[in-house]
Length: 125
Image 1 (cartoon, helix red, strand yellow):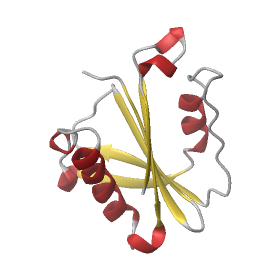
Image 2 (cartoon, one colour):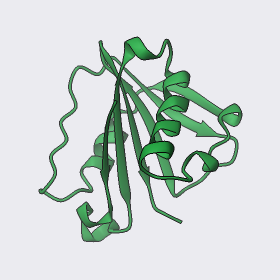
Image 3 (spheres, one colour):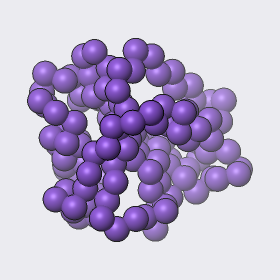
Image 4 (cartoon, helix red, strand yellow):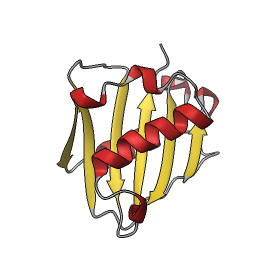
């Protein structure tokens, strides 16, 4: 897995409190997006941001396929010119929906021919 965390110093003044996490994993490791989502959150929790997994109720989460690439690009555009994220070869996009809506978090899975990409945008509480 490849993990990138962009803290609030990368964000433009307009939303300087927001953070972006990006995790990339080969599709061969997970047979479907929901398993990837759970594995990715647990990986981040165990290796980078302890306590993250406790914020999730995986049983109460839905992975909804749709056309979310424009929304992901919108969050990426919030970053400074210091960071460039280019997204190509996206076959499917998924939005993570929770039983309890949190307006401070927007989460997506991008699927390429060979990889899953977890994209988390959030404002730390």
